[in-house]
Length: 93
Image 1 (cartoon, rainbow, N blue to C red):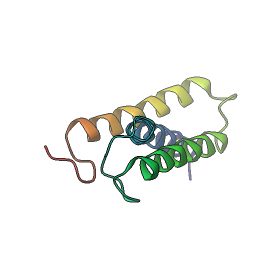
Image 2 (image 1 turned 45 degrees about the horizontal axis):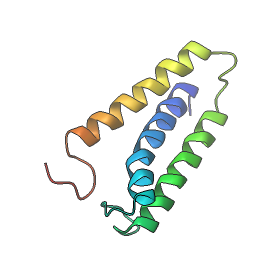
Image 3 (image 1 turned 60 degrees about the vertical axis):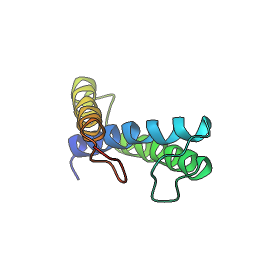
Image 4 (image 1 turned 90 degrees about the horizontal axis):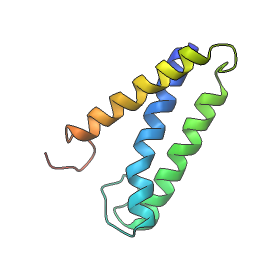
């Protein structure tokens, strides 16, 4: 897989982890594939962050810092728009 794709997926996973992690540490219910309570959301958020780090590790950030920043930012924007549009699993628009 191309490095740009890995960076985009890294941004997607990092952004998707934010609402799950926040809802987990604040003990709020939030739709999640592992369950809607706080512990499954915390774990889902943490796993998303780990996967994002692994995607970033699989790219050559040092050699292409600008491409890494732009690709990661595109992934963040895509997942942010996905959540803002109410398309996430279990959300009502």
